[in-house]
Structure formats: C-alpha cells, structure tokens
Length: 78
Image (cartoon, rainbow, N blue to C red):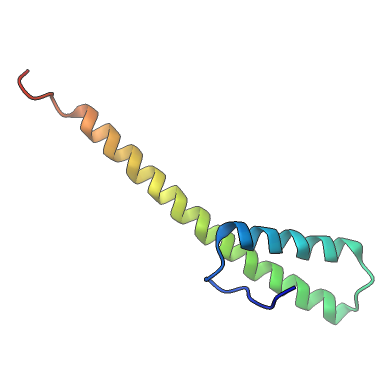
C-alpha cells in the first residue's frame, strides 16, 4: 500500500485505501506498533474522505439554494 494519505487523493482513492486498511486490521496478525501505525493511516484517510464529502455537501446545498432562489423570483412579464 502506498504511504500517500494526503489531500491529493480523490475521494474514491482515499475510500478504497481506507477499506484496505480496515481489512488489514481485521485480518489481525500485526504487532501492536504495526496496528497503531495502520490505525493512524486509516484516521488520516477518513479525514480526507470527510473533507471531500463536506465539499460535495456544500456544492449540493449551494446548487439547491440557487434553484430555490430562482423559483422564488417572479417570471419576467408577469
């Protein structure tokens, strides 16, 4: 697994890597130190996913607000 967990990852990449981390942790057989390092990597990946989802949520809310404001305006010529 690549060590990259930075912001440059897209949502899907970060999510897929997070799934890999969870699988490795669930499989067991790691030392405590390895498990902690993997857990920390998972936390970083989860934060990247959260930032992407928050950005998407903001875009959706902005689009919905734009649609609602255009529906509230009276049509020209009425």
